[in-house]
Length: 356
Image (cartoon, rainbow, N blue to C red):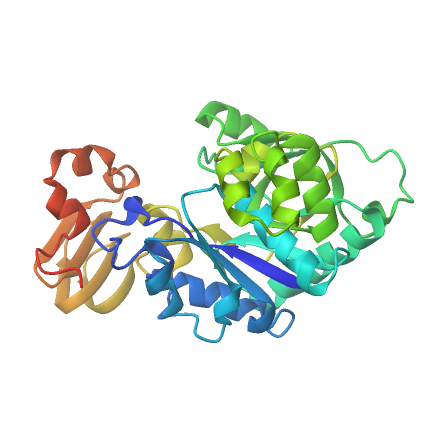
């Protein structure tokens, strides 16, 4: 099996940590290692680094290379312009087909995932690959919702017509529909009706991914022939950017969901870190030198000095050289109004120093 990890974008929702010089995939938000390093590491030994592709953007590629040195240089797929994850998957699937054969299984995943039980995660990937191989389908890893979350995708399972089908025997379910980022009321109803969160991981053969993209994703289908012929510039020039979820998962009729339990969460906003990080008895999560006294449900990321949080609740505190950022956990879920109000130089380089 091979893997492709999507690691493009700066990640503005994690300002002031995320900048062009230090994009989100390089941030140590959950453990002491960058998100991308965690993603590549948890695949081993099922998928070793030499069989991992990393899809990233040109502006952050040099920084990306510094944290995944075990991944061969030829495995870093640098987009000449933002292509979207559907096109990144097509490029990766074509690379796998060329290097290892079209029947080779490919696990496609986002870099910003938190996984509490890596062993169970690897076993889930193995099971998904076996199901896909037997049924010729795209298999997504699904997680049972624990809240109404409007920033996730939802797999709505359909009825199993044939209980003897390979996927049914292995515990997977056919997906009746995929709903990307529903409104909060719809998200609540979907969870109550038995839908599964999309864990950001899909598995299929390179051949299946390419065939389904060709059939269902008109934004990139015209460029697949040049891509197969090795003409990347023509591929890039002929496609439109679209995400994998909206471009393929919402449209394909070959999607299965495999319910899993491996301590999953999406590291999408500062607020998500209270779920992804190890918490103390009062619900505080911290990286760096932090002392909590009579404080509850705070998130602190300290890269400069020691932070003492006394008598406060539900705060986000970030300390960097030259900048301290304080807000509430609730306001931290949407930083766009703040970033729109700040000078451009602060948005790009909040510490005020050189980005080099």
